Figure (cartoon, rainbow over the protein chains, first blue to last red):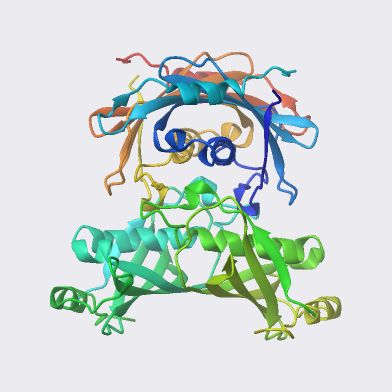
Length: 133
Length: 133
Length: 133
Length: 133
């Protein structure tokens, strides 16, 4: 299956005093990608996961423009109670950032990790990166 | 009674590409002032008001520095189901912005405005500006 | 001429602990509207104006959704060295907020207001609200 | 030498619809720590570094409170043209997050990495973690 693609809109005020998009803004871009990938589709994901870790590498500075950035996303390392979302953030044809988010599935009532449900496991399989470059 | 004074910390990333604190950041500063003024003191205020209106005038640009801005705050125009919070935002000795927030007391269960309770009315009286300049 | 229309994308993290878009987020939405209205068109506006004042009234709470909000914008009260941008923020068919920004044209080298140039005055005329409701 | 300690103030609106501080807010907290650590002290750092990478692990959720979070920071892996800043973010006595930022020293005129200057190297030695737990 192809990567999941989401267009994300910068805000002019995401730029900082160096006239580049501030590094802190990118996590909000990644969040918009995850929301698009999961929230509409899988109620249990949106209500039953927490962010355990982010890794993000900045490859080139980005200057605000009204056209959106393009996120390409896929899923790796699906485990008993966690999975990873990987991202490439494209500014035009150039990769501006690469990132990874580790999500842990939670039972919030018991306040502890819970096993992925079969339907979740099946859904995540659809986001495996089989056309990665 | 004296004005309520609250020190609010800027963030470096509040600055925009013009190297000034972006106008959008000030509403977060005002919110920090209201939280300090109300949340700890009056449970009903924090859980039972909505923001109906802001007015804010920017008098001079602010450049990030690690020392906090000083908010001076007072209450005006206490009515049946609303009141106004007024602010002066000081950067050192200079007034950088003046602002006003109209708060409406709400009954969220019924989703409509509710009358101020006597204890709320009494509390707000303590924030009347009797030493305004 | 018709109102200027701009679609602005919320972010999931614009919501606060009350599960509504926080009041502070709207000024960023208005900024996106002004950027779309002015930056591409009039270099002098983008490099030579400051925000002197905002007024914003919140008419109904907004919950994040992936479809954009719609800003309808027009210009009023064009003066020697200032003009007002007015906004209606639509969430679907409902007006969620009404707002006004007073912009002052600046000579940044001299650090004082400057008169609007004839080309700016002409451009602003195109944004007069002749179809306001 | 002891770790560098910086107190960072949350904002109420850093909380998201789950009533926890949103994961995206932490990078702004880290930035405030770096600004305090470097900007006042070393002009070349503030004007001549870029963020190449962040890694951040979230250990427990944080709910807004008016008292600040405490960042403990130290420097590792000083190389020819880069160094790492490490962080532990304390909410009271508990570690809420651990993080690392890789900073690359840049010659912005030539738009390429530059070697750390001896004075920078000396300054960073003062932030080595000799009392790490």
